[in-house]
Length: 247
Length: 230
Image (cartoon, rainbow over all chains, first blue to last red; front, side, top):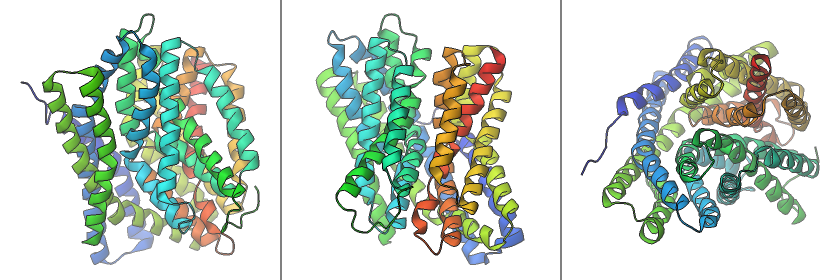
C-alpha cells in the first residue's frame, strides 16, 4: 500500500496563498484610506481570510490526491470497454454531481437567492447548473469518442444563447453569464478533465492534451443556456414577483 | 453555532452525491484496486473539510469585504475610481489564479512560441479591461446584453483569423480565470456597487453579470495572441 496524503501540499499552500495575497493587499489599501473598519471587525475578517485559505488548500489537496488520479483511472477503464457509448450518460451523471461539490457554485447560488429575496432559490439554481454541466460533460465525451471539432458545438451553442437572451429579462441574462464562469471551478475542471484525459489516452487517434482542451469551453457554455431556459420557464409561469422590463 | 451546523450539513449534501456515484461506478463497472479506492476516500476527507472551512471563511471574510468596498466606491462620486478599481482588481485576481498558470504552461507546450509570462499578462489585461467595462456599464446604466453581444461578436470575428488549435484554448481561458477565490469577491463587489447606485429600481439584477463579462476578456486576449503569433 502506498497512499499519498500530503504529497505536494506545500506547493498547493503556496498557490492558494498567492491567490489570496492580492485580495488582501487590495483590502488593506481600502482599509487604510477609506473603510477604516474597527479592530474588532478586522479580527473577524482576518480569521475569515485564514479559514478561506486553509479551506481552499485542503479542498485542492483532496482533488489532487483523491479525485484526479481516480478520475484518470476511471477514464482509462471506461474508455477500454467495448461499449464506450456508456461514457456519455456516465459523463452526464459525473458532471451533475461534481457541480454539487463546486465551492464557487455554492457561493453564487446563495448570493442569487439573497439578492432576489428567494425568488430564484439556491436549490433551483443548483439543479439548473448541474443539468447544464452534466450536459456539457456528456457532449465532451461524445466529442472525444467521435472526434467532432469543438467548433460545431460552440457556434450553435452561442447562437442559441443569443436567441435566448433576446427573450430573457436582464436578471436572468446577468445570472446566466455569471454561471458560465462560476461553473468552471476546481472540482468540475480538474476532476472531469482528468476523466476525459483518461478516456482520450486509451482511445485511438486522440491526443489527451488536445482533446482535453475545449472541455472547459463547453462547461462555460451550457450553464448559460440552462439558466436562460430556467428564466423562460419562470416568466412563462407568470413570474409572480419580478417587475423587470425586458432588456 | 447555527451557521456552523448549517454549513456542515450543506457540505455533506455537496460531497456525498459525487462520492456515492464514484463508489457505485467502482463496484459495478470499474473495479479499481482497493488501494485506489482508499486514496479516493482520503481525497474525499480533504475535500469535505476544505469545503467546510472555505464556506465559513468566505462568509466571514471575502463576501463582507467585497460588499463593503463595493458599497463605499459609488459614495465617493468618482467614476474613475470605480472603473480604476475594477481594472486593478481584474489584474490582481488573474495574475494570482493558479489555473491561469496551468493553462499558460499548456499553451506554451502546444504553441511552443508563446511564453507563459506574456500569456498571463495578456489574459489578465483582457480580464481587467472587461471588469472595467462592466463598471462603466453599471455606472452609466448600459444594458448588459449590449456588452455581451458586442464582446462575443468580436470573439467570433477574431476566430476567423485564429489558427484552429487556438480556438479551444481561447475559450478555455475564459473559463479558468474566474477561480473560487475571485468569484465571491467579484460577486460581492458588484452587488455592493449596484445596491448603492440602483436604489430606485430593482437593484438585484445589476449586481450580476460582472463575472460573465470578465470571462470574455481572456478569450479575446488569447485569440489576439494567436493571430499575432501564427
